[in-house]
Length: 69
Picture: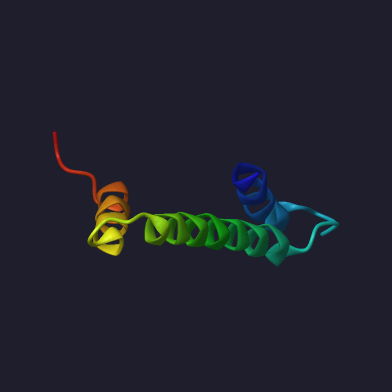
């Protein structure tokens, strides 16, 4: 679903007749991303571990800044 929203956000400005609003794909993409991140964060807080937030943010950082191999 996020890939389709990205596609709409990428293609919408290139349309000659502007049948799809330009911000539609971007809005849907960020909405879905926010929902996904929030649900993962809530799930990590539900676990009885000492510091679930630290693990969550560490995983996010490793996804963004992958270690060089």
